[in-house]
Length: 156
Ligand SMILES: [Zn+2]
Image (cartoon, rainbow, N blue to C red; front, side):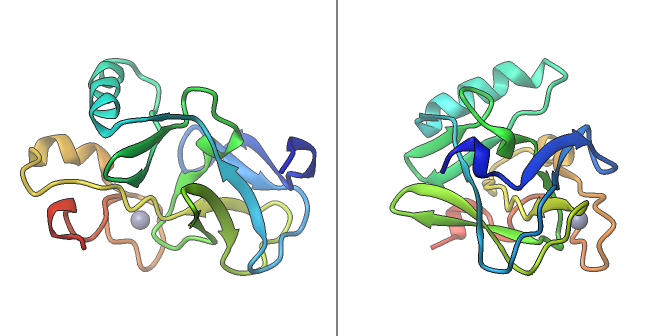
């Protein structure tokens, strides 16, 4: 998928910093963009995360499986600016290890593209550290956090 075919662009968002907006109508089920970036191990992702915690910028690490994380901040594309919402209009789909965002419904021009980050966490994580993932997306179904419902250690 080339950048030219993208129907989205990054702009200032009402949710957080930059967001990604639809510039050409997207239909339900359509593949919108691939989530790309440097593929690193989960250990490396932890290391980079701690390093970047001290900076103001928001980091976007996409968890593929227990061994692989995509660091969208390195060699990433516009997908790294997509904000979280508990009421998403697209979802991440794993196609043999490559991650694509697919529309859950028709999305009109001007709408902000959002997906449910479902960030992985562990029951051993410090609750204070997890507070940075509080969600204020404003959706009626907002669960108050960008974290996945179940900790990694309990996920199958
Ligand atoms: Zn929310």
